[in-house]
Image 1 (cartoon, chains in turn brown, purple):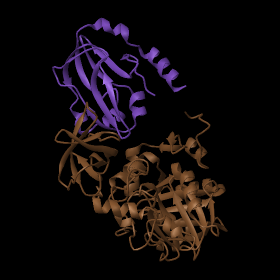
Image 2 (cartoon, one colour; image 1 turned 180 degrees about the vertical axis):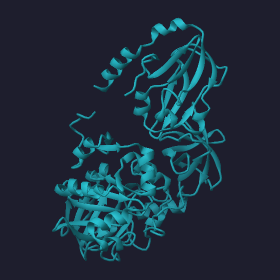
Image 3 (spheres, one colour; image 1 turned 60 degrees about the horizontal axis):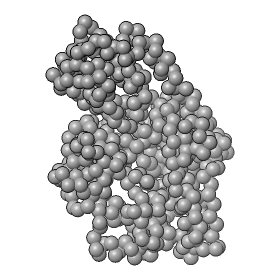
Image 4 (tube, helix red, strand yellow; image 1 turned 90 degrees about the vertical axis):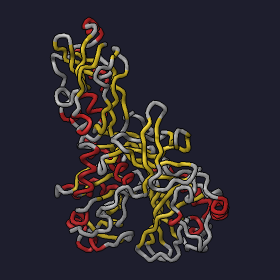
Length: 370
Length: 129
């Protein structure tokens, strides 16, 4: 597996080997799953700060007028009104309103954009954008040149300020700015993340990735964390993972994520989405919590009184709650409190439908954080 | 990776410490380490009859669930009740505080199907190559 030449390696691969990380394939990349252990890294992120290698994710740079180029029509969120230096989360849909990807749009200037997409969908997204952007616009896949390091946790601001400067600490949620580090090297820092904690995502040229990684870890506050705890952290927040909880077979309505869809403007998939709204969603993404430490797993059947009603798309043990938690698509309306079960035929775990997020109190809004 | 000298081992990474006509049973440090942080253990019930190499318990880690097979045939005498609230004992102390259960052996000669420490060490070295 480690020798599989088809798997890509991030610029931080040697750092991971040095740290003795457990590595596994993810989205076509050989990625660190854990260093000290998923539970320890999860707790350190919730209580202190963690550093994640997220270089596998894709970045596109776009030069385009948002309206005449068709860029605004490509994304479910309205981007025309975005202030410079702000980020917006949305979806790329196909004509049937199926989700091609979830992404974050960064507005750098009047016609300058950065779009951050999932690793496994880079080439498909690029093709979709290329086909739908007008000839005058410039679309460039810079994923291979750009490293992405996520610094997340209640003490992430303290760590970031020590290295990038106090101005970085002033970033508001879902905004970004360019900073100089290591003398004249520029990097983009956004106050965004996938853990539910106060946190930042840092973009820098790949040849500076190792230096930034080592510098951020050098103070001893932030520790390396792998994709294993990134998954438990995001699941506790009810954040969907593309390829599991979101896919082309499901729409933002099915996924309960219409708040990231702006019906005041046109977008690809709008007609199909409005039709589905009129007719009602076939199935809906629900969140559920087990009554024990047993973990729902991806692929388990969701049952209502013994009758199969859906499938688990994400499931794990929740380190913060001490029980199993999960998400999945179910046909029918299940309000919080509804009792269901999930299982694989051999095992049946009683679960209760809950509202997302599973974990209510975190440092995400920065309150009470140094 | 710790492998204790006086125990017997299976190729599925269970260990057995024979004491007279009974044995303590658990999973090896190799198994606990490859599973990662263990979050749940389902144990057999005292009195339950087990068959060598048949299912007897489940361990869940953050990543996945795995089945555990009985190293011997016989009846379960008692189980390690600590594991229901502290499954991490399996990671912390796989050969001692993190044992799974104590069982009565119906046929101690089944030992012949198990590995000693030296064979198990070689076996795990082969797996990591």
